[in-house]
Length: 314
Image (cartoon, rainbow, N blue to C red; front, side):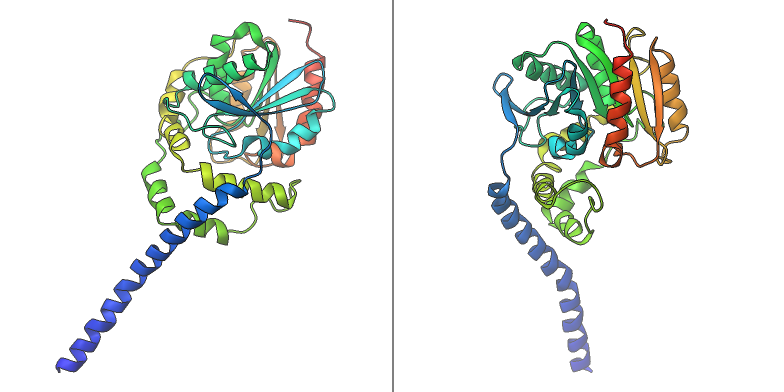
């Protein structure tokens, strides 16, 4: 009887050790790969000093109107992610893609990722570029940041253009993002494993292989780094900071809204109400998912150019 019991215990011990060995392996591979991948990130854009920290910007086109692109939360390489939209806009406009601290090639932050700090850092970068009159075009949570921005620098804004942008008080705004779990998955190498086995997220979209590889490298570098995690942790606080606010009525507002975004009830109606406050507000529903600029850049560019050309000088 002793031998079968002993054999059973050995078998159970081996079974129990398998996940431990697996996690130890993925954790080691993740640490080694992360260190080696840093050297493979190719430089792009221009690093702008904002007082001890550097923000990366991509500045293209030379049109009379300047459009400043701001990314949504979790976009690890904003300027590369916005590439199709930059390509579509740059013939008619000057386009500046801002990579906030903690994204793209920008430095990590050492201040909390509050809506106020983010807005002031973006403004500092634009000041260093000598830009003082522009359109803010923001994706997702950048709609929240832009609303606060409009209270700080209203005289500099020509218009706000939202790309499926977040709205104050939208359903789910007060639900925290579980960042502790992301850190554990990162350190164990599980996020890397999932990314490697989940297929090409940009398949069929206008990105070349080099750009997709660079975005993958920057996602590994930034997506669960301290700055982005801190921004996630501040999401509820940042929504709360603009609760009950709207854009100034005199600020023209153009909102592109994804028809395919069914996660939030009344998503289109929320934007229609937001636009109705503006003396010159418009909503353009587009077929597609949340990242409309991945698949609808031409339509966004055409409608934006038409909207801006219809504005009288403010």
